[in-house]
Image (tube, rainbow over all chains, first blue to last red; front, side):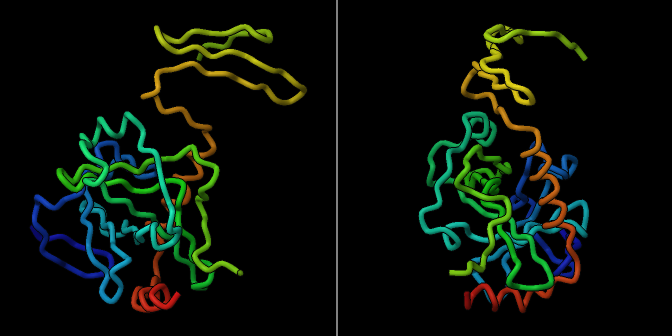
Length: 142
Length: 76
């Protein structure tokens, strides 16, 4: 199927690759279907493009490249919703908030996107974990 | 909306398996203890609102120079 994207124009995707958020995402409860697309020039990044609304597109980053020992507990409810059988079937992503100044880019480590790669069911899992920040600065002043 | 008064160490039951106990009261703060099935998600409401706000900022932002970002993050 042909979809309209915010950053890549019109592109063709396969329906079976659509990532489906049964309950939407916080703030976007009515958007269920997204396409996970590569960002040219950086394998750590992906687009999460809404199928229905062209102007809604997240930029995702592999959280393990932000914090090496990142770890989360996926709630029993999400494990059931996504029909997760093995931890290794899941993929984690952090949404990035990008501002004009690149030094101010933040990653949301407190609410990662969890995708079951077996069936492409997904959820934004809100963690009750004080270690992880909603606005974690990518560029740290050491 | 149901509104009811409780004293310290009193509790309310919601359905068959949720209990909320008032465990401590001070001037402008109350500490609650919640007994609920592990599968039930329980959050501070402001956390959900913060995630909603951050999602909007994240997904709706325009004028993103993705090529520049891709290079910057690679060289981080």
